[in-house]
Image (cartoon, rainbow, N blue to C red; front, side, top):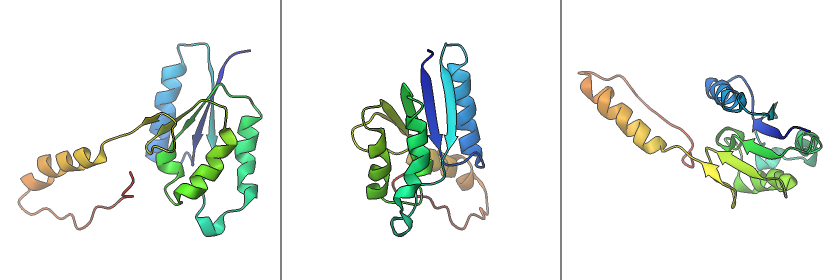
Length: 142
């Protein structure tokens, strides 16, 4: 039986999610590993939490993945650490890697958005005579 890597993402609708899927797919294309992309939706806000939201995760676990990669930067965009930890507790005992946001003790791949935005402002916006950017925002944890 070939190893299975499950990639848990919120949707395929965002460009970043499509690029993540393409990159992971290309990375595993040369090895004897199956990759499952599982768009499970965003983790809910605490007031909207129901245990029924765990079913897609239980379905993934039932496939016995060797590794689970979470695009936690997208999955956790609308929720709290408590809800995230509740969902991720379902995966206990399965090796996991997080991308975007570090959760618990699992390894994480993170991006320095602060430096990226500073470079953007320095190299693009500050060189314009009349920059017309009004507001740039994103989650402070990201």
